[in-house]
Image (tube, rainbow, N blue to C red):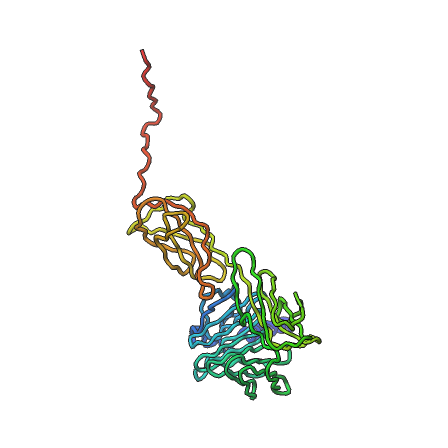
Length: 398
């Protein structure tokens, strides 16, 4: 077989291209297959909307919702305007701010390890402690300690909010801060202004109109300023006012807000805190429809379904004989947006409604009630005319 010069060049280019593609796609961690992505280590215990997840042996991203499982070596990205919490089996918790990217590393010696590629994470260590690896170095938390770690362009900031920890090789006590860059770790001491209420990462749920939020702080001088913004970087400050009085009632509607106290030059005198105002939206009922006849008995299952609320996985279905629900005759807690169950209640007119269940906000307000008619045996069919063409004339009077 003979090859011309152009054919030989094309063949070499093809082989080189395939080899390059394999090198780009191949991940040494993914070569272990199910060994690296089969172990469940945590749950997405809260998310205001879906976050993005990429398992270790895949290139694509998929959606991860509240209540979904998290595996070792999963990469998690929190989209803009979204916040999430990951709860591990050992008690460790991570509060992830918007635009944060983390990778759940394999634990070592019982200590949970997480890599922060970008963004901000508030970590609460379990019984064995927590290590947060960043591009600049490692932030370590002692057991039962808490800290906020933020990855910036050329440095890493850490603020211990409970217990103690280390940034690089520098120990930090409760309330102390540190900054790690190419020159090493700089200890910054405690913030001169202490934020009081609302608590860090607090979520406030409302029905109807968004409520006013009162923020308070301690230690501000007369020239200090309070700032409230929509973003962590305070690029767009919604409100700025004198901070000498120590409190302010803010009414900004629904959404995510950040607040802090700064000096007259705009330099931070306190930590930056986030609070979220969320509308408590009830589920939308789907089936049975209003007035529908529902057949159910010991063998025939009744099916109730509704449109799930974003970020919620648990619901409560309630039945009553009165539209006012002054008394609830039957109720069930449900995982997901559907329930199949036998109903042996008395036949007749019933009303049903659904509400959400949440560990933080408790039970939501219910959806508007719908009526249905419950029967335990099939309704008799209408008689069928065998010879509909025969006409019977009524007798005429004589």
